[in-house]
Image (tube, rainbow, N blue to C red):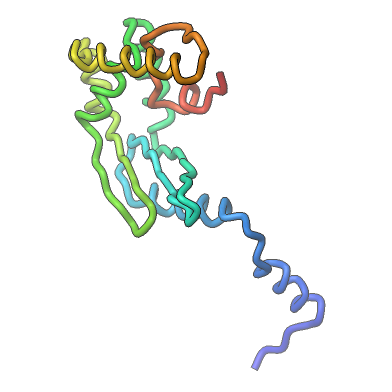
Length: 163
């Protein structure tokens, strides 16, 4: 039988002490989820909280950060916008769930092919986004900079940008 020193026991208690902060567990879960997907995949992971809220984690598998950033550079250079991002993302998104965790996996090679081919969102979806932006403007009293927001991003440089 192994014995534990008092200092080791105290340290163990600190490690196991509840904090009310789910982020370390969510981070570990997101990393574990990402390990189950193939290379060059962008993951959007929603952790639904008991209070009805959601925390979103983004993850990229091997090669995904570089490819995602390259896709974004090409898309922005070609003038693609949020409507195009929604359309392309929907075309390739694989949905799955693990309890209260919802996962959207985007294999990036097909996304790259769409961007290179100049795939664009349909006009009815573009107009629906404009209607949404106009309504949001009315509700909030804020004037949007544009009725067609920019490309949302598949790489960390754009996805994690704070603006």
